[in-house]
Image (cartoon, rainbow over all chains, first blue to last red; front, side, top):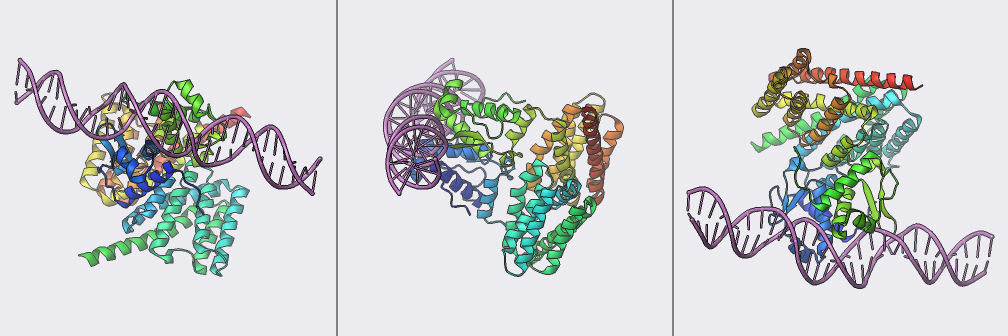
Length: 239
Length: 239
DNA sequence: CAACTTTTAATTGTATTATAAATAGTATTG
DNA sequence: CAATACTATTTATAATACAATTAAAAGTTG
């Protein structure tokens, strides 16, 4: 899917970004100096500095004379950046992160469904229907369940006709991947779960925005409740 | 407020980012080549390339050999990046953009209030109360209404105890500024509007998450409705 | 002519070296 | 001790050279 050629600058940015998200460099930590990064990675200062600038642009680090390169407070991280999200995925996402993802998915996806039903443009409806078809095929093993599910959620965001919701496709996709990693059970494998998705689609197609909103909300709340339970179980076991 | 020293790289990145958001360079357009940017701005290629990398990291442009530097499709723009949001503000935000902002503010701020009420940590409650106090002073002209209002919304996001909501403070702040720009009327200047904010605070303080959610939702829906009306009026006048 | 291949040239990618600027820490001074 | 000056470290900027990529032009072939 990826396997695109990355130049040296991007390779270094990717490697450092990943390490920051993995906690190899923690908030407040100093990264190696430019000179050290050059020797460690065997690349020029040009490439090194450009990588540093890219991570700075994504809000992960700061770089100042004499002070060096440091990981900044996480509140400055651009958590909705597609690269940062992918690096998060390469880290060790835990149940608490999954909860944070779900807490935001809940209102966003519900409102996106609401807007999708409000606009209900033909191209968008077709796209959602196509994703649904893939999901149905997946129940017979003829397609990839996870991929189809992700596409379904993405098409609804696209149908919101709002650039901010559309930009959040990266966020939702990563959230779904974290969810998948913790349990395959929250994904529509059964016909029941498939039907819940069909219902949302029907509401959107019918232009019933409130019903589309409610149907999405119910599904999301159920998913969140399961995770809350898992967290509780985990914390009880720990004490 | 700002007036911090910007180095050459940051100055160029800022200038180009601003121009892209202003539409001086449109999607698909080529920016001047590195060499041209160097001469135009009278800076070295080092600084120029670093600025290009920063804008690339924010998803605004792509830069490839022979092809040059081009503005990429807006769906790739990191609309939740604090710099991008500020550049949007320097552009010419219209009513449609304001609607897009409000459509996302609505579910996010409602859910943030819900979570704030759920966690209701003392420090967060105090912070919200402090913002409220500023708003009250503002009704007497003893403080800045807009600043106080922005602080109120920010403290609720902080109180969600969710890093994703917290990162959205930039987004909400920009949304509020766009709102302010279009009309001073949607901001709590009257005691009635101030009271609506107090109500939300009380619900959060009491841990009544559903009430906090509903109270926020009602306010947001009212604001959105006003903008929808303005858009309708505008479109009717145009036809 | 049409399809394919090669060449060319424009542009970014990387490396190297040198110097300037900022600043944390240290030393000095009154 | 407080204020100041010095020093050394690190990033910021510049300049130059060459490599790699690739769109477009030129050439080749059937």
